[in-house]
Length: 188
Image (cartoon, one colour):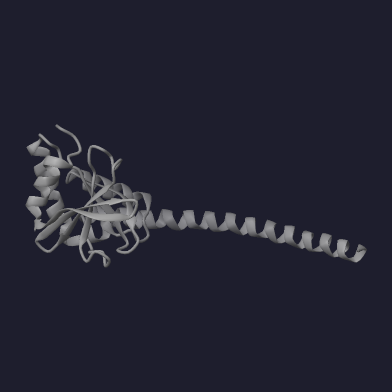
């Protein structure tokens, strides 16, 4: 039994030493990652200063706070939003929120969506470009999405992972009109 206790103490000391080394290495990795991200952020800032590159901005690859802020600002000018990313496409999630009674804001948002639509990659599972709908109930009854294939669009709703079709395939403008009238975010 003494031999086992002695072996246990020895192995515990080795384990503690390895854990200490592991934590030191983790700290080194964190510091190095921050340096790498800072340099990458500078590269992103220079790239974004020269021209607006939607393919680059929508990509979630090597995202930095600089790129994220630039994406947010550029989308906001188009009346759009983003949050998170889609693993399947490696792009930011694009959100649309329309107003029930504000033609000016809706025009900006709809034109903005049409402007960036060519840069959004279709999801393989839906074989469509998917836009999140930001609506007045804030997804309390389910999450709504606009799926776009070519010139056709439909609206779907997910509740606990189960998909139901709200509006069958129709023209994109018809689907956007449905969102404005039924899934609006704010009245004005």
